[in-house]
Length: 113
Image (cartoon, rainbow, N blue to C red; front, side, top):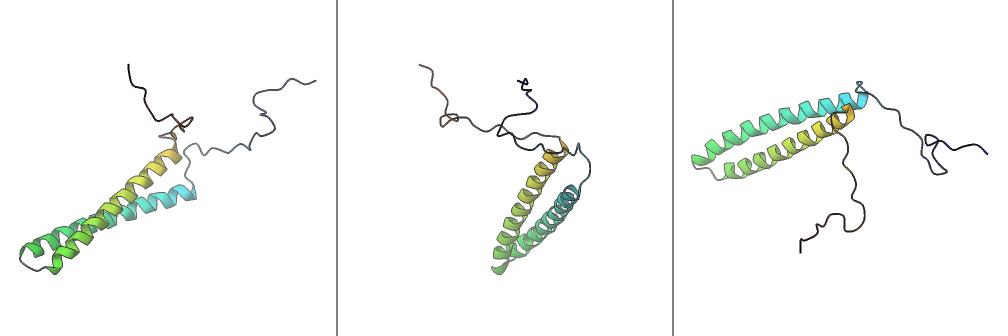
């Protein structure tokens, strides 16, 4: 009988994934492009919101709606940019995925009695 090694796993051991070790891959390049586009869109929408805000203060009601839309769009672009940066950081090895909660009460804290 052969001794089992821990590296071989068991019946349900999955296939090993290759690691990229921070190398540039086409996926990382696309994520970097997405970050650049999201930042450019955010900058443009902030500029437009400032412009619409100054026009709205001069009395046109239509510009208030455009100001609100530009502000919401800028928030969405910045959120997208931050999510892409987090994904890129994980892909390059700067951060690690979080641990999954174990059990149904893992998120609850006990009260001191």
